[in-house]
Length: 228
Image 1 (cartoon, helix red, strand yellow):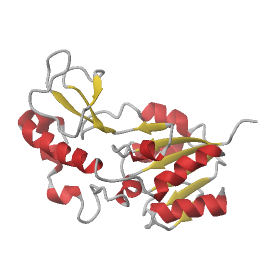
Image 2 (tube, one colour; image 1 turned 180 degrees about the horizontal axis):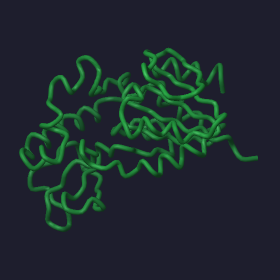
Image 3 (cartoon, helix red, strand yellow; image 1 turned 90 degrees about the vertical axis):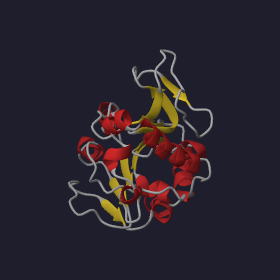
Image 4 (tube, rainbow, N blue to C red; image 1 turned 60 degrees about the vertical axis):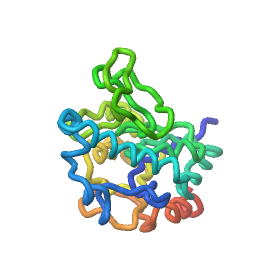
């Protein structure tokens, strides 16, 4: 008998407990940096050194943090379920906790890619990307991150995956960021949906769901112990 499939959509709230700064919360990165200066193709063209330094510091921090209880709980679920994670996060904490099926919607912090051919993607050796680091075609390498104004190429695959869920779980995301927030629209009618977050989203368009008003670590534990 095949295992039930749990599809999990995770956001910044999952990584925040590991000490990774979120972008949108109070005290988050957007209060320190202007989006237009560090997270757009135009910023890259205008001031590559600033953009590289911004992501170098984020990448450096990633080497200093560890997965938390939420990451480990999701990995542990693979013993009894077919677990597929769709994450808006660019860290590798799900993988480091042991999850084996992780889809990154917005890129991966530890990877870089060619600035002339987005299909040329490399794992960066260490945390620092430097001016002069080039791809095989001779162009400067850039962060493998989906910037504002760039297409989220993984959305169609994520939508297809969402439609296969027997159980759908949303953890640590405001559901305010599109196109990721629209993935719940692809969940089949009647599929149990669980939402874990300290704050209930204001404008949620899921017809019926179970709300667990907890931070990611305690909420995921409660999900496993009480509902699955």
